[in-house]
Length: 304
Image 1 (cartoon, one colour):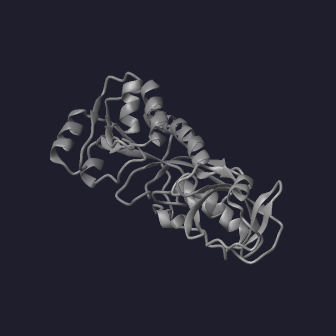
Image 2 (cartoon, rainbow, N blue to C red):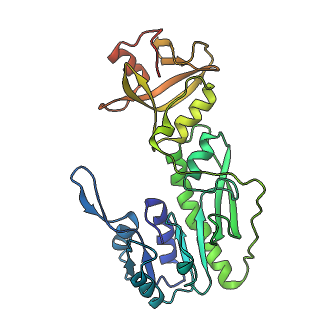
Image 3 (cartoon, one colour):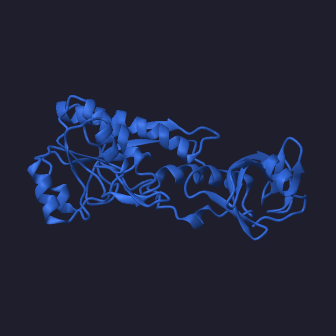
């Protein structure tokens, strides 16, 4: 069970394992792109590209009785859930051995929809992947396997996502194998150390220049590529894709350096940031140095 690209490596790994893949559940096709043409989910597209001869179920609602009947007819022993919806109790009751989930955090830390982004936004230096048994409480089931993964100093959420989806697939197969031979023993989660990772909205990417340079840089990394960090500049939206910390000091949101090799330097509540890659509204991405030259940015100009 899965929909986005994050679930594809897990699908492929299960299909190539010694276990029988009896079916795939994903979201319905949706219109996407400029032409709003109907497009399959990444998981459904992977079923086709891999040549998998399995049933693909695409329910509009997980509570639909027809979907329940079709899922029960497949007689699944186990549901492997990766980046999907919250399963109702009626679905959880179908598989003989229960359901397992791939979650990209070290549970109980970062329960929720955006654990990768929030780990980086909060300045974590490590995260991980947890394979756990689903229960009615969201992200609170017993842990089967958990492995730590270091977060790179300059790593963005998108880059970490690419690494964790592969690690998640690897650990999922280990967990399924362990359940089959009895070598994996579930361990109950505790409520100690619980933190939340709610879904990010576009407004969560707005830069507050009164915060320290390190915090702002983590926001930029953690919201790259979605929802994207941004600020206001000359009453227009300016996206900030990458930045590095500078030793300079200046008023928060004020340009303290413009030109030369460093390009664009902006003061924060503590320290300063070099805006390495930006994107004016309706324009392509560009380096901070190109932005300064092309738009004649001057020292003293304000952002935000």
